[in-house]
Every structure is written in structure tokens, then in C-alpha cells.
Image 1 (cartoon, rainbow, N blue to C red):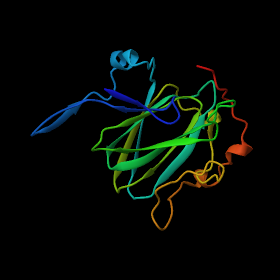
Image 2: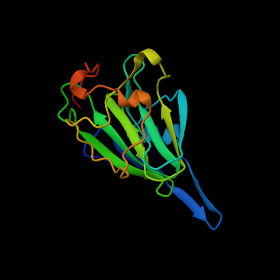
Image 3: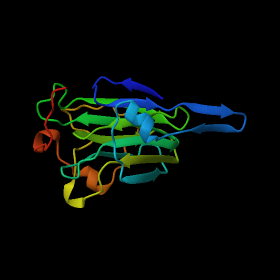
Image 4: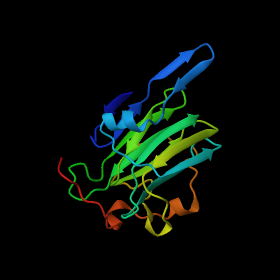
Length: 188
């Protein structure tokens, strides 16, 4: 398993080893012991699965507040996405900044998005299947978000000419400057 630190060090790009032959491949996408050895002491409690049929489906930017804050381990099974994590931890030297990575079925990469980050992705191909593990159950009362096109964050989304396809909920989210983030940066 390869673990790459991104520009915001708490967000990691993880590429599990693949064992392939002429039939295809095998890979472990989650192994609690191997992840713990790599510094990820996580207790996942829920798996989520989303399917997007079109290019340009944008989901996000979402997060849950404590006590239901979630660490996420996200990956693509079919298709491709541009995946983003935005630092929303008060006092963080990277507050309001984002990192992004292309996750595809072919590259097998996963993104670890810790608590204190808003998360979102846009599909780059048709028929994209996206899976993710989370460390807290879904809680509607703790479900929050930030508008995908907040100019203060200025995410460079790779969008089709006709723009993103959004849910009704995602069109009405506030800007980062309009939320009271429940997260605080802890010095390493």
C-alpha cells in the first residue's frame, strides 16, 4: 500500500497494491491491520455507495458535525471522479484551502478525508460508481455543507461546458464564511 501526503498533510492519497494477471486483478481496499500500521487507527461503521450516470454530476461539499463527524475513505469502482477535500478547521494554517485528486477505477487510488474537512466530487465519466467508508453513522441533524462554487475556496472543478448537475440541496448550501465551523485545528 502506497500512502502519499498531499498539499494539506492530513489528507492522504492511498493506493493499495494490485495483484494482476490475464484474468484481471485482486486488491485489498481495506485491511484494518495494514491501515493501522500506516497510521490510520479507524473504526468504520458504515459503507456508502453512489452511482452517477452522467459526466458532471457534482456531489458536495458535505460534512457532518460532532458528535457524528466522519473520517472518510473514498474510492471509485467504475468510471472516474475529481475528488476534493476542503479544510474547515478553525486555526488551521490551511483553513479554506482544498486538495484534489483524480480517482479512477483504473488507478485504484483512494482518498482519506479526515474529520474537519468538507468533501465533494464531480464525475469525469458516465456510469461512475463511488464507494466510501465512514467512521460515524449518518445523522440528518448533523449533516452540513458548503456551496460547491464558493469563490473564497475557488475550486478548479473540471466541469463539462454545460456546468455541473447538482441536487436541490447542493444548490442552496452556504459559503464557508457563512458557517460556524465546529472543528478546531490540533497542532501536530
